Amino acid sequence: MHNSLKGLPSHVLIDTNVLLDAAFVTNGAARRSLALLGKLGYPPFIDKTIELEAIDILEKYRKSFYRAFDVAKVLYDYMRDARILLFPRAKQISNTSVNHHDIHVVSAAVQYGAWVLTGDLALNVQLRADDIQSRLPFDVIMEAATADGADPGLDKFIRVVSPTRLSGMLFGRVIPGSWAGMNSVGNFTVCDMENVGRLFYDTQTEEWVFKMPIGVSVRVKCPLQKGEQWAVCGSYNLPGAGKPGKIFIRAGQYPSTIFSRPKTTLKRITSLSAGLTNYGCSVYNQDHWNGHLRSVVIGPQGMKTDTWKHIIAIPEGTPNPYDSGMLSRVMKRVGALNSQPGLLRLPTEQDLRNLNL
Image (tube, rainbow, N blue to C red; front, top):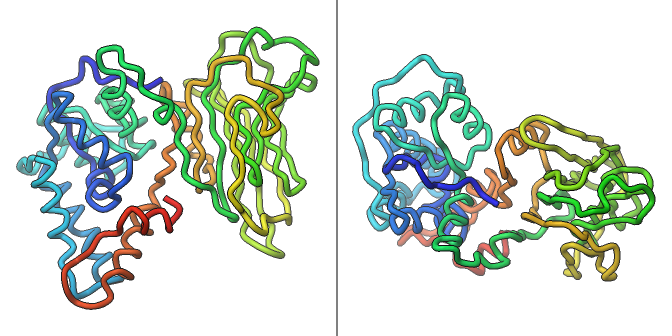
């Protein structure tokens, strides 16, 4: 259900994206994972290059949204409270397969003999290719939740951030039951969210299906066998009235098997009121999955092609409903909350809920 932390080096290098998300997205997975690292016996650190990269990013936000405030102080205060150590700048290495702008992460991990905590799926895959251990924030959360054989609780398997009228996704990592490989024995539902869509498998046609209540659906052929683990995702990006949008159905198996099909549509979601969501059956309590649901994620972002490839390339990989654009949205909200000089205030839980976090 997650990539275990057992056997990893004793220190963990915090990537810039996790560091900033943890400092400013106060109810996100990054902050929760960093709060657990010490308890799990992995003291977190950054090196000087990551510190300077984070400060440079914050300075750009400061100039854009709130010139009167020193937002770097929030970062340093958080680092102190979270006991994140600051190491000297690592010597840069050149023999690596990661993107040029992430070479400093590899360099620090190698020099200090650490594993890497990152929210960047692409970097996670590239680090693994260089035999550098890396994990996602959700791996840390699950490691803590399952310590000593504990039941992690349903909220660790099902993560929900409300979709929007313009974009959203339903994702499942699943294992079909004894019906897999049979023909015309019914439909089997992974997830059904009223007013958004239903993600299911149709045994009559051997297709994964994403069907939206606005009157559009998309299918992809994908024969199944009993006991196989699959990742499947239905997603949509609908820009607005008169503009073409797309819905997608995607399925895949580790490390690189991918089935995908898009459909273009002019239809759109005119309103998105709260409705019923069922996992493992339809909202009408029909078409039960009858297999294993290893994880379900509902989020406000669509699914990019490259992101899907990276999810499939990671064992037990799942999308993060707190996507990379969340930090920007939170920082804009910080600017709105602090339009007058004074004490910098981070968004409250209610402020974050108003952002569909």
